[in-house]
Amino acid sequence: MRIWQGLVTLSLILMAGLGLLVMSGHARGLLSAELQAELHVQDFPLPPDMGVDANRVADFMAGELQDRMDTDIAIRLTMDPNVAQQVKTVVLPRLMNVVAVRTMMREVPELSELLDLGTFRRTVSGTVHSRTAAEDVALTVPGALLATVDGTRVPVTTTSTGMTALELGSIAAGESRDIVLWLDESAGSVDLGRAIQLGATEGQRGRVLLWGDTGWFGADVEALRWGRWVVGGVLAAAFLFGLAGAMLPFLGRRKAGPDRGDAGAYRS
Image (tube, rainbow, N blue to C red; front, side, top):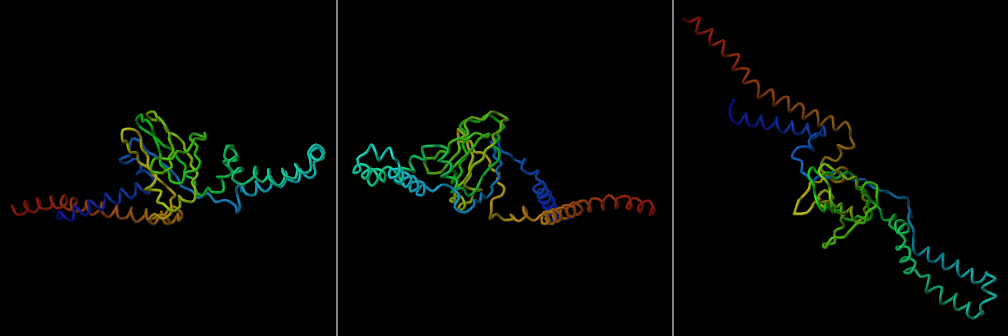
């Protein structure tokens, strides 16, 4: 067998074997980094008009207070009619405007979450693992609004470049963190596979493995189960064909050796 044929056959065997590892889910351990994140992206659809509208809340509260000014007997008996009318027409609209109501709602954590609920479009969940001790671990995720680490809500920070990030702090050797992030609509216009970055102090860069992101080549393999068998079958056939092509010349030489010896003995 010629040298180039052997190289082609060996390359075919290696590529098919690597493809089989990828299809079986065992390739993620190859050349794995010390700091690694394994994340899954999912859409977060909401029913129409889900969330809290600050305008509707402000209008409702202002209307309720104005009605109480007219119907509350104690107010009507204790306040001068002119004063009550000024409170109703001047004071209440200034106190219960949309900006004031939105500010007050943002200052209450539970209400702030409700305001953000209507903007959730995607979730990113998974684990961050480190084989060695790492300090100041951070994960940059575009469009992140809300995050939890090990079931506890943590704040989402903004970097100097405007990118939203999740700070995980120190991670001990062999320790992992379970994270969940909720993203807004802006996350749908970027390639999350490139935008999500993992790092730590001293310039340490981690590896991010992302599943479920839309638009990547071969994404239909996740949905079409029969497609996995087709791709796996092709890889297995290429692997066996390449392996057979590499072994046949050696088997032919071993078989031809004794025949030549027998022919020499016959001539003598």
